[in-house]
Every structure is written in structure tokens, then in C-alpha cells.
Amino acid sequence: MIRFQQLGLTFPGATRPVISGLDLTVAAGEFVALVGASGVGKSTLLRIVARLLAPSAGTADVPALGDGKRLPVAMVFQDARLLPWRTARDNVLFGMERLTIDPAEAARRADALLEVVGLSAHAEKWPRQLSGGQRQRVAIARALAVEPDVLLMDEPFGALDAITRETLQDELAQLHMQSGRTVLFVTHDIDEALYLADRVVLLAGSPASVSLDRSVALPRPRRREDPGLQALAAEIRARLHA
Image 1 (cartoon, rainbow, N blue to C red):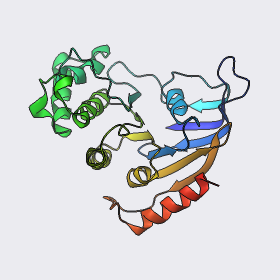
Image 2: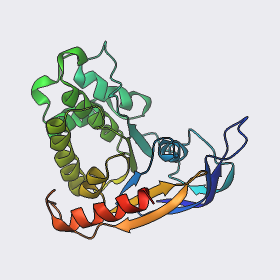
Image 3: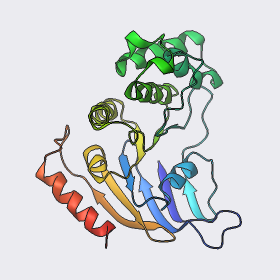
């Protein structure tokens, strides 16, 4: 699904690369979390997958362009980035307006996904009438509506309170199990990464490369207090601060 081989990226005018010699493969259906210090290049990798950036060195095999009825990738940001002049339902429809699908099918997808994220009763509300967690649910529904091969998530729960964050983590874990979508998820929260992901990839160094690639071979649904998760978290924190 995604393969980086000896990937490097240097921004124009910069004297040294942000990323160098990075090798990473993400299989179809995997949930992979990227962790690491601020500015290490996690979000940059998402943008390469989304074809918003081109690598300066190495190769990046990423999903092909869509077929007009769906998109290869969709992204959810920390800020929901909803259009304030459109209702929740119309925000979900927005992503599909660039696709060549029947309006009735677009409406069906929007309504079905709003039900999946628990917002059917709020479909006609404006973003200002929704809580932060509800706005993120709309953003996730909008991303899923284009039926992407890969869902890119850039710290999507970072700005939420702890209770809402845990609720949305649970909902995302359930959505992933139901849909089988490939997910590449950026977070600073190691506990969040381990709770959600099949693999946790630690980026470190300057320029950045993969410092640790650890499978999370624990059954789902997971328990946050699982000693196995806590042991993995301690291992990753030790590597991060080494």
C-alpha cells in the first residue's frame, strides 16, 4: 500500500534534509502510528503520501490517483477545518463534490456516515453549534465519504479534552475494525498510539529516520490499563529519550 525506500526530503533553500534514508512499508489494512518529537517530520510523511510533497531522494510508492468515484487518500487534521457556512451534512458532502458519483449516492454515503459517527440528529447544525468532538466526528465522516484507500490523520484528537479524546479513540478503533481501511496516524501521545495501532513507528534524529518499528500484538478491543501496553510504552519512551 505504502513503501518508502531510502526516502529523503530537503525543503527548497534548506541546507540539510528533514528526512534521510527512511525505509517504511505499510500494508493494506494496517493501522500505523507515527510518533516522535515535534518537527521531526511526521506530518511531512503524511504530505508525501497525499502527494502534496515530492521526495528529494529515494522512492515513495503511494496510492495511485483516484478513479473519479473515490479518492486514494483523505486527511483529517487536528483542527476539523469544517466550512462554517455549511451544515454538518453539507460538510460531509463537500468532499464528494469533486467526484463523479450520483448525487443520490453521495447523499446516502453522507447520511450513513453521520449515523456511524453518531451525528444523525445533528446533521443540519452549523459547525458553530457543534462541540469540538462533534466537529472532529464530522471531519472523520467527510474523510471516509470519499472511500479512500488510506486515511491520513494528523494529530486529530490533540486539541480535545481527555474524556472526548478517549471517546473518539474508541470510536476510531471500532471504525477501523469495521472498515479495514489503511490508517497512517500522527500523534505525540505514545499511549494513544499503542491503544490504536497495529504498529508504532518512532521517528528520531536530524535528519529523521525510523528509530524503532514495533508491532502491537495485543488483541482488540484493547484496554488502556493492559500491562502489555504499559510495557511497550515504557520501551518506546526509553528509546525516545535515549
